[in-house]
Length: 170
Image (cartoon, rainbow, N blue to C red; front, side, top):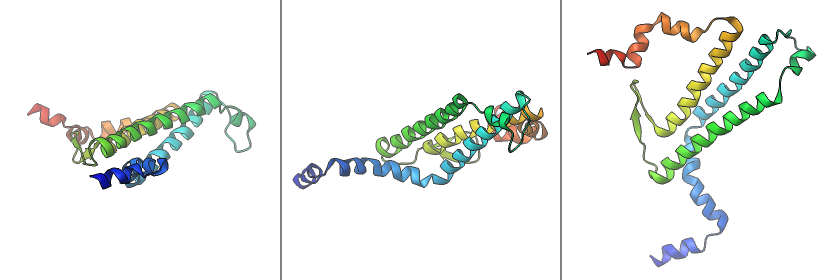
């Protein structure tokens, strides 16, 4: 017991900080593909949002079109940055809970789909679903068609089974 206390007593502040961050970083590194995917979705949402704004203002789109570049407003870019920051904080909080509170154990949750997801996976999946929905809303504002809504109408039985609505009827 004395050697354990001596070990922690002799650690520098930087080493103590790294000792605390190691489990959290392990969780985040194991999810790097999902985090990169979320980042890509945020960028696509940003680009479709810019295109939607340009479309609503009836500005001509062109690579060297000055009005197109003037249509991009910094407060809207700050909103995207804030959104990404809030998603990141939420993911970090859940990863910290998993790593430090639950001791790194997987807490699997069944949400009615074929697979069970851990809390950390859900903390990435939920913002990804929000971003996908936002991308399709932007596409709908530009083209008047929402491909995601058409998919729901095209395969209603598949989505009902996926969401577990058929189980409630039995």
